[in-house]
Length: 338
Image (cartoon, rainbow, N blue to C red; front, side, top):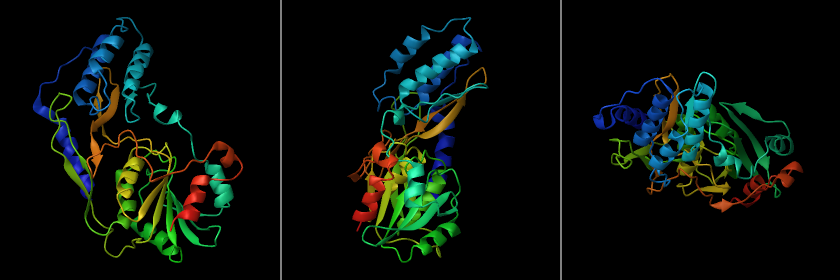
């Protein structure tokens, strides 16, 4: 898969970025804080795009570091500082905790309820393979739609299983792929699914890597190219709806980025949660690890999707409707997609 080759090449390049010398820090509160602040300063890829004055942020938190502070206190301070990056890809890992920035989705409506979907639309009767739940649904006019719910890309999607799913939708008028609450996973799984709707090699986006410690030290963009599905595997050339909400992140956000560019696809629902940067990890003197966005990606038009992707058709599923067994986002896709 071409995207995997690009990623491996870029991560290798990142490890050698700029070939500048690396400072060594002592294993004490100040040294570990300074190591973390410097790693983010030199390698995090969205400081300028997000308008973050990292020097000001670092100075503000550095003033709170004391020589006798506990590991717990230091971890909490560092996690609080990393939250200012507003990035769900940024995590600090220790032996006792992992930090995580959740506000990218917690401040938004959910627009989805799994129980409502399973009980009122799937009737607790559906098939599952490769992490995909699927079933043929019928709309108010009696038209059939193939429906796939993909709640995560953490499972490897089998090419053979995917062809079987699409074959089971042979009598359907259109296809609905529901990725609401999909927090990401394997980019290769997202690519495997997207390739069933691509019929020629297609540039779906671009990726860059850091070439030095400066905030704007990046390589030229590398194209990310998706090929069609392997020969002998089924593709779908009819209309497709992709259902989204704010909790679509990382690999799910990339999937939406690709599908939004295809003429037969409509993105229906709410803006995604973003998470476009390729994550990378680095260690601190005390053994903690920080994971952060290191390689910025854009769509095929060069637009950043780090802050999310707007749907083609905005529809919301309020909690009151979901509690009463109605899902307006899914209803719209079932009854309005041509």
